[in-house]
Image 1 (tube, rainbow, N blue to C red):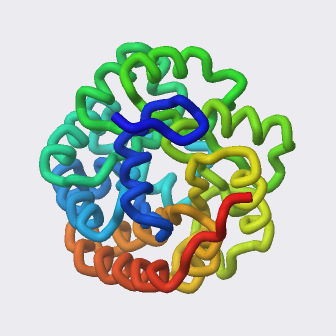
Image 2 (image 1 turned 30 degrees about the horizontal axis):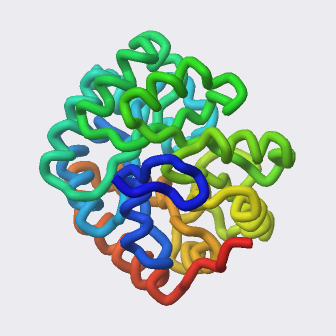
Length: 277
């Protein structure tokens, strides 16, 4: 296994994926597991994986404080069907057998704590999860996750925002592996009309303190927005716009999802992320 230059850390499947992109921004679609149901969401995830470079899978939770109304409704629909963390891991296990792209799991701390941090890291990695994002787990309070994640080869991806102080940004970057998740706005997930200039500034701040890829998410919904951040970011996460399509079309959303992601992909190909400072 190769190693990340200057860090001594082994390169995970996420690191290998970014390396193969050779400077092009990664396209990272997000969908909520179990929406509209487990079988349909598995099929939709396979569809978006054919277009994306990395797939982010949401674990439904009753109090998703980082998510806006679109993702909250998706989580509630999944919870109403009885979707659990264990069921999501089984979904990922089947997905990982069928698609070659890395899988990142987005979950909140409570379901993982209830499941058991060490057990979660073991089972997630065994199911084919490559990295995990826990939005309500700050980097300085993440010791329960970090040790078992390292033991099982699971990347830990921490969030930073435009309001994150320089010391906390450095800490989040130092405790991240795989990539750093750059929240492009102040607030929750959801479709926005424009990408704020603070997003570009944040990406540059992250690149100044780490060699890890810096990926932008929250509020990126159109090819134009993706291209704007893709000029600086190493990856672009598209979530609420896709979840909106699932809400509108349910199991029949495959075509609209692929169509939107194909347009975003075309916009990203025309960009190239800025070099690191």
